[in-house]
Amino acid sequence: MGAADGVLVKADEAREALSGAELIYDDGATQTFMSDGTTTYVEAGRESSGEWGVEDDGTFTSFWPPSFRASYTLSWRVVDNVVGLTFVSQRDGSVFSGTFGSRTTP
Image (cartoon, rainbow, N blue to C red; front, top):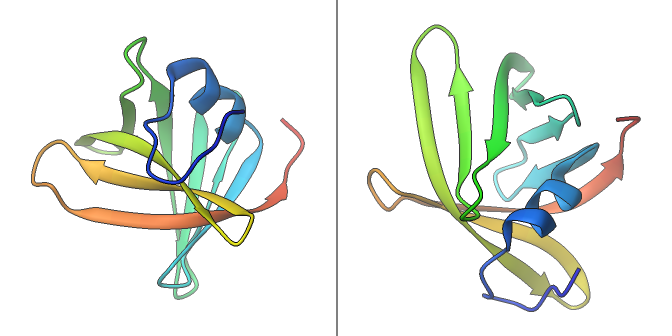
């Protein structure tokens, strides 16, 4: 991975970085990304399950049943050698960031 703060994440880098990873968001929520395209988001003890993917142009996509779909532009977040991701919603421009925690078994 060629992670440098603020640099857009390439599609192959995004798939590699997220498969089997946990992100810890700035608000304390966590999200695990399994290599089979499933994901689990936990916020304040509430868990929800969805699906994730990366388009060939690097766009991150997510689906949360029954009908919520979203697309994000991804950039690297690197602060004091701690690597994470920043997501920018293609729908409304909202921004959220997190850092990588543990790796799970893909």
